[in-house]
Length: 407
Image 1: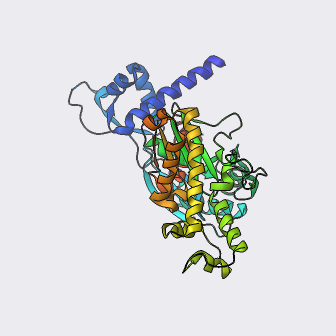
Image 2: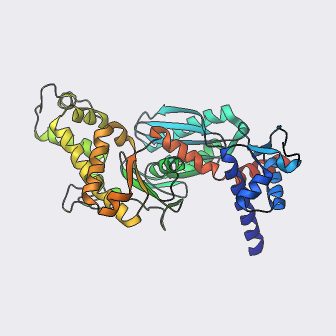
Image 3: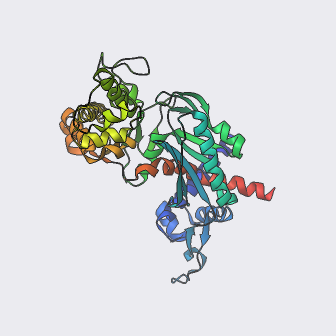
């Protein structure tokens, strides 16, 4: 039994290597054998299986070498299989559909009408149902989700920034839609999208939004930890005896630098000092009138040199930089990517303050070697990364469909 299992694993590994060769364009069987070091017989057998799964196709161009079948170019199919993913950012759920190359073929968003977990689940169901109506049996039979919180086995164990506990995302979608799900933390999902375009082996992604989390990629693999909670830097203490965190401790990074905490700091200031700080104080006017404020409001006020908003963002950047400096010292990545809605709303100044703080707290090796920059994929990155999780299992999933069709 073990020998059979190992054989299947080797076959799958070979098939994945072959698909990787085709991500850049047309490649013949002979060229695949050359690139992978596999025998032509092994390549031929694996390619035949992948063609049967409709993951690969032979192209019609003639082989100029005259050597026959081995020279026929192969390519990934681009209109037979798709992968769907979704993520929550700000108050909307973003959905993305990818082809086999990982290119985005469609995307859309649905608003989250309130912050309850039930609304999040029903919004996921609505969006994926719409995708299924469009793509039907061409959709790989699994859904990818990037969710807030600590995730294990398709379930949110807790998402302290959202006030959610024990939310069974995978179970709900299985019941509503009839498909299994691959659920990971939304910042981890974004990291997968960013990693794909970085061409590095070791990377840290730091997601900053209502919560704060790091995704640590070591030798090309996402480091999840023993209990799927690696990178929970939001609840590491960075300022002893600092503000109380929602986790119960004091001085956590979350309590200083998350969107949730900064909004609470601003509201608390105006409760204690019920008057405007500057002329045309939009923050004061909104709160005085009983309206809510958003992190974008605070960021816009900071850009206009509002002293309270500016101080909050600079202090957040200081402690974020300190935490990132510690991460770079522990894991020695090639780059650090800053992402999340706070990076989007804070803009270039906020990003640069964080980078300045990393440099201030780092040793010479970090100053020399680690590149630090904002996310390149933006808001859609989490949905793309969630769908990439599905694409990673395309051989298994396509095989499942083909077996059902033949049954």
